[in-house]
Structures are given as C-alpha cells and as structure tokens.
Length: 221
Image (cartoon, rainbow, N blue to C red; front, side, top):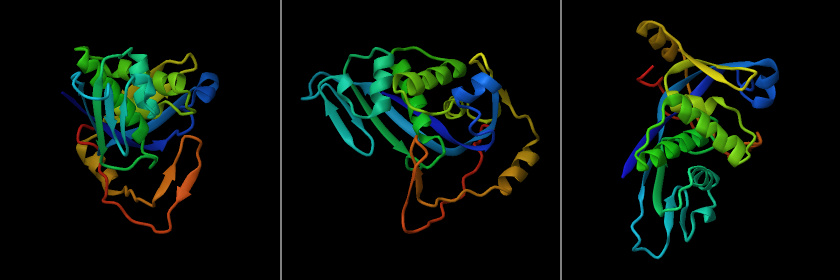
C-alpha cells in the first residue's frame, strides 16, 4: 500500500497570471507557500476477489467494473493518463474540505499521481510531477484552471513560481531567515467562511460563518 501526503497552499501575489491564456502572451509569476494542511491518499492494487474491479473512497464511494467508469474526474483522468487497467483501491482524506480555494483539487491530483507512480515502482521528480498534474487537469480533464496549485503541491515550501511565454515554468525558493518567516506567519490569519468555489469561479455561501484554526506555513519552508 502506498500513502501520499501533499500540501495545500495560500497565494500572496500573482493569482490569475498562472493561466496559460495569460502567461503564454505576457508571462506570469506567483508568490505562494504550502501550508500545514494536507491531502492524504492511500492506494494499492486491488486483489481480484471482489465483486468490483476498482474502488475509490472520498466524500462518496465508487465501485466500478472498469477504471474508465469512475465519476470522479481526477481519478478517472489519472488512471487514463498512466494507462492503469489493473484493479486499484484508492482512499482520500484531507485536513480541509474541497473547494475552499486553497488548491485542494490539485493536491489530490498530485498525490494520486505520486501514489500511482509508486505502485509502478517509479519515482517522479518535483518538476515532472507538477507538469504531469497540470497536463491531467488542463488537457485530459479539460478544466479551466491555472498552473500554480499543482506546482505548490508538488514542490512544497515558500516559492516564487515563474510562468514563461514558451510554456515552461521555474520555481525559485524564497530564502529568508527563520525569524522573518516566523514574523510573516504571525501576521497572517486564515478564516473559513463556508464559501466554496468551483473551477468556473462561482460560489455557494452557507448561512453561517465559522473561523477555522489558524494555518501555519509548512514546516519544510
């Protein structure tokens, strides 16, 4: 069994410049950091003794006879992209709910790709894992999403991410004294307003507003 953990992120500057339609003409740059809230995925090859071929558990449970029958778009697309036909069992849990605007969907995609590669006894470096996830979400699924979330989930840490007009990307770690990073963290607060986003930018708001525990910059900054 493979277990992966991928971080969510907060973005300080540059949001929107990570969309291909923008940076392929003007270039783009994002300043963002991974935080200490994560997505956890376990995956394994499913023995052929069950009534179903594959199984995935997230907010729903799906049992299918063929991997192409999964309704979860990222699961279906990752299995398709890697050509996985063997039965698999995938479980997902996270520190925060989906559609909170903190890169949860991309953290899921990156973590699942990492786990599926590990099942094949293959390892991908951070750059390759990020570009794989970008391809899956933008090209295989066809979602209108940017490119920063996948990079933050794959790299972790506090980074400036440059998006070049030729489609390439560069990740430059922000180097600062630990005291400066601690001061930045002490001046940041993250609140959960029960506002959920989808990839089209629409929101659904609940009637009540709650505050979430303070999220800190990830330990590996």
